[in-house]
Image (cartoon, rainbow, N blue to C red; front, side, top):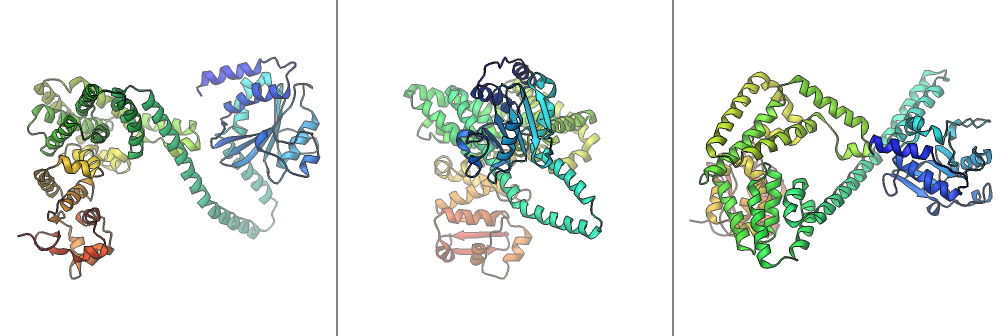
Length: 580
């Protein structure tokens, strides 16, 4: 919630006329919005158990208020940390009896809350179960009219984002007070060992909490993506939705919305729609966009124009766009933009400090759950700085005359050269920890371009790839793989090539193997080695995947003709007799 909205709601709560309100009015019109301001929401990690869902059992029902249910139990990841009882605004001050009742409920073994509170619409009283004295001095007491000025103090104690941190601080203070009364140092050391044991015991649960949070955030993201796709016009889905689609499950969600709109189109409109989408392959400078657009088009292979558009794109990419000078210039511009702007982001120390400050500020303001989902860092801030600059320059020049594009490329390459001279060591030192930015400096290699787009989308869609690619295309892929075999590991390109060759009964030959793999293969049965060893290095893993796709079980696999060609450093598999 933005600061202005929060301030407005706090002012509204502080100015409410609660005269004549019932307990239900206090719950609905005062406590409910206050809990939302504190970050609690039904069904979230910071959950709210309402009175209808949290019954107290005997003997607690027989003592105190006639009300037999808790009004609010505030929960952090399924654990109740504090409770809140609602009362009528009359009397004006929260009564001792109301505080005693709330305290009693907090002690219930099914509740065991650390904090308990009472709110009557006029004031809020909060107590710490472990710090209650004879006079019941509250940990926090605030009249409604004081809320705007004292809300941050309340939020630091029981706000969703700070409650656990607040409790940890209080536990540390309790521990400090307790241990300071010891007279034997070995007792302190023993306590330390017991504490370490507790920390080890909770680590699995903490890891599971992290997984649960991430999955919940992913589900929220997917729901948001689905809503965005449902609201978008069909032609806007590739532009608006697919830019944020980062895996096949998310792509499936976008496709569901697209297909629902598609079913309402007539044949002519469908043709026009797919034509427009096919044209969009060149409209955005990013492999994620091309990946998603290609994957979407492959869902409609019965349209000849779609197949031809994808086939044309594949063949052009395989050839490095040699037959289309304008497309080749665009591809080169995209590559140089990624490299030059990425490297330029290292040229200013002030800019680097800005990245760090922005990441630190976000980390301070985000909840633990938000940090698990998307943890701000220098590289994420760098990426956010780079992306709009690439897009802006690309959209300005991508349709410019080829001579103009080449002129810009030369200027960018000169900028890149100058930055390399000034900051080369820092650039090379940073890339190892910067996620998907790591490969930006090498973005001009054709193989990288296809690995991140064509092979990644074609390999899972084997049937479509089989229709689109001819044997000559597979030979082109093989030639490409051989040219770059020293600079890559097993990936979709290698696996696609192996699977399609196997499907067509052609000789299946892995790319050249490194010496380390050859050394392990030498002197033993190659087939049994590959069967039992998942060596994720170049051709061996891709070969295994290809044979599985071929439908060969372990016994059938051992019957294949397999040999190790030491001269060419390759494993060769043939179904039956060797080809002549």
